[in-house]
Length: 77
Image (cartoon, rainbow, N blue to C red; front, side, top):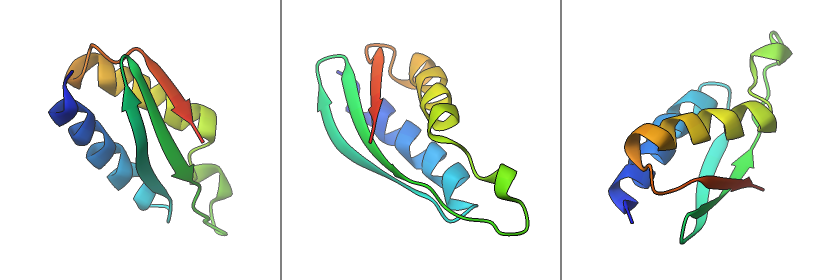
């Protein structure tokens, strides 16, 4: 299990969602499943700039394929 890769992905994605005031928190990593809590940020001047839960999940999966290919499922809370 590539916990370093998962940590890298959470850090990189955290910076992306953090730019709009959001946060990511690693909840659990069990087998090939990663569980992450996403607290969506706000941007009153550009609400469409805030990544949706679906978008964050897709970006996490794509990044995990590179940095932690053994993780194939993401649950976003």
